[in-house]
Amino acid sequence: MEFYSTAELELVLRRSAMLMDMKVNSAGFAEVAGRSRGTPRIANRLLRRVRDWALVHGVDQIDARTAGAALDMYEVDARGLDRLDRSVLRALVTKFNGGPVGLSTLAIAVGEEPETVETVAEPYLVREGLLGRTPRGRVATRAAWEHLGLEMPEHVAAGLPENMFSGPGTNTSGGGEA
Image 1: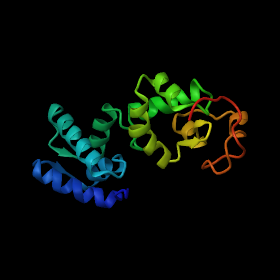
Image 2: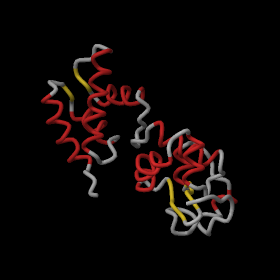
Image 3: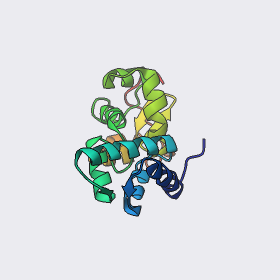
């Protein structure tokens, strides 16, 4: 699957905004596009959410600050992660010390079906270098810890596979089904 660039998503959003009769400046389009995971469907969904927020708050022209405030309210962070994504990462680092942990165990920890975690959250987290899949289970990368504002313990960093985006070694702690 090919993902769209921010510039390509901005073109999609400009057309959608025109169809919805929305006034959005370039910075507003960039803000929404930047949080859209490279996917037009998500970009359009976020644009509708921004529109709804703007209507409720009486905002006529959507700029980066307005779009950012709306998306923050809907719990979509600047990197495009939503509540489920952050729940998966938070559980992985706080409950399972960064992993490895099996999909089923991780899904139970966040109160979701394994299929939802695997098909909705995991692909984007892997693509963004926040989560890795190993034969022993899912592991949080250093970038995941940093994104959550947490410091990765050295013993955890020492256990990450070298090719796992940003850490040395092979993780031997934890366990669970892959």
